[in-house]
Image (cartoon, rainbow, N blue to C red; front, side, top):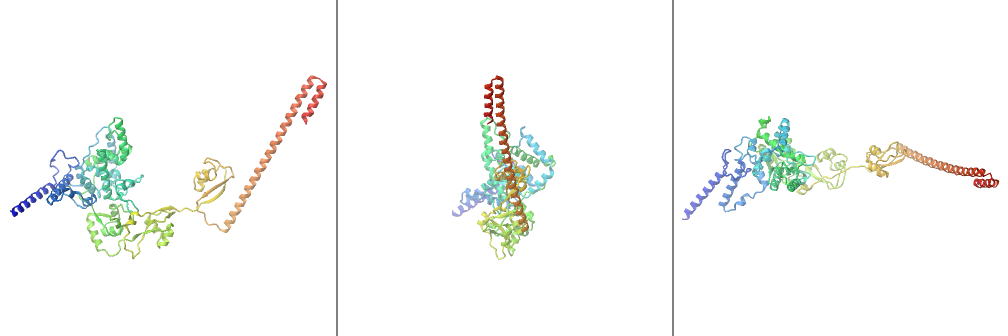
Length: 582
């Protein structure tokens, strides 16, 4: 009886495993859908295979007595690494190249309305009239498209999203916008930190091919969950979710539609999805637009390899048998000439070179890194620090990107050549928290006393001595539009370095200062004398005016008395004249 039960159990297990194997077999492109309720994003062969693999995993887990939920609890980064490492998959095997696979996964409706169609046509015209630009852009995408498509379809998303780096950065992982957005997916620093993209002295996760793709798709999935529409999610990706929410709230309050065409958006966002639609149209039918797409095979271009020791970029490229330029195109996140193992990074290598690298690394004898981190104890100039570390100043500046006229502040971390006896990795604390703090190396302020020339203003003086007009005005307690009096004293503080004067120059400077003081004293005496002369002239003129008024009054009285013809009056008049003359 026990043997019969055992046979039945084995038979049941074999049947279940056979059913799971059948479910995992990818359907052919011409096979009809099993159910009309399957979402459009999941109707692609990659999504169907993913769902079948999940069913098989659940069946296997049920046989072993483990809940099916545990089979799908793997970390996203591990799944991403597996997707990048796989040279091909059953779901991808039916496509001649990556372009055919992308076309089969399109799932966002086209913009066919009269309001948005002109924007799409304008974007199509822009791309089709620049075939060289399209050729460079698509050629750059060859290294990254397979991995991005794998990740998009693994999440059940429409493959239009894999084309988004064409719009964001033209598939340039080193792209940096004027707003400080960086990488292939153009993450702002704050958004990158929110999605765990490391940004420190040694690496910028926004330029990491795998990490930035994971973060971008996480962000897009979140936006799609917020707005329920891929076009609006893409608008929020470009504009910001806050701006789109305000636009939607305004339209709802005014009884207006809340679709892409009717929302009030900035011009850049208004043209954002039409550009993606244009790229989609060109890839859908490149011959129609006279565009030739490069051959991009439908298998992995690169493979992630973990490192456990600090290693120079040049050394890693040489061990892998590729150029430094090729290595940096796959690993643009590393900002310095050395890759630190403390943060457990993965380097990406062409698939055929990854095995060569691992073998060469295992056989390598000697140090892998020529550079290490050094913490600066005191604020100093690059020249002084270079002398202290016994290396050339040019080397210190070049490796650490230190410009001229700069001080290195205390607490900073700089890269320096590794001592021959030092083979230890840089610590995780330094690798994650290192900063290079710089300050301008300015000479002390020098006070100058100048004599203003004819027509001098704070603007002319400021331009002459390399300071601002506001500073000159503040130092001399005047307004910026004030015109200085000729030969007036003007005070200026300047940082211009002056040569060390000789004894003859010092004597000449003192002689000039003495002559200037004499001239100022002479000007003051002349000014005081001119004021005194003017005062005397005013006093004399006043006395003359008073005497003239008195004589005029006396003559008036005399004429009046004569008209009376009275002798008594004449005597009185003479008396009045004498009184007036007194």
